[in-house]
Length: 309
Image (cartoon, rainbow, N blue to C red; front, side, top):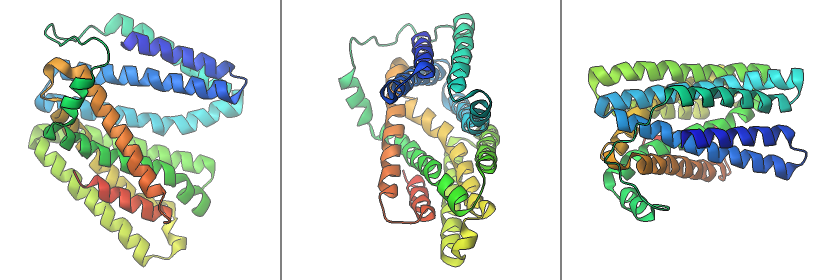
């Protein structure tokens, strides 16, 4: 599956680089999205196959940290490549990158699926439904859903707050935006150590404390500071970095708890947890963005959702 997903991604990159119409370009991006779903399921199910408990939580936390490096690097390097070589160069670079990943996967990624894994023909609708309506699964997947909704809302409002209202240049915005990705990486590494020292339940409690504190801090900023100060990058980012520290402490433990009972169905459960957190997280983002509120107030509501389970 990892090999198939990577090949599809390469095809999508090449199609995007050669696209001469909007419809072809959009189709190529859809193809890339399908490919990313394939590889994401493989990565998370492989962790579930090889580890459990605190070890799985630590690995999921580390994966979350490394994934957040991409949003940190992409705006800066994408802008640089586009400025020097044109926008198509971004997709040729991704083609080269994915080709290297394909070779590394062929060489170093063994099959992790246990011999007793359930083999299901076709789309496992009944298995999806059974897992989805398990209270434990939906509870911890719901934890990730709120956090994902907060992260997606931040991605949607950050440019408006920092560039339109805060007057940051595109380069300055890329630096501030990217720094938050490295912050999440650092907090994820700290969270992997905390899981060993204090355990997964304590890390989930820390998540509530941190995101709840960011909610209160942003509320105070909105209520007590004039609008001209609210858009200052360091004022806006103060509650954001606290909230994303909470994200780092939550993703690993919540994902491991959600997948833990499904040793023989790791792929099915991994696909479902990714679907739930992305789809429902996007719904949270759409709901708060549809309200007639200022961007900071939208983020406040999303933070509130991220404190619940």
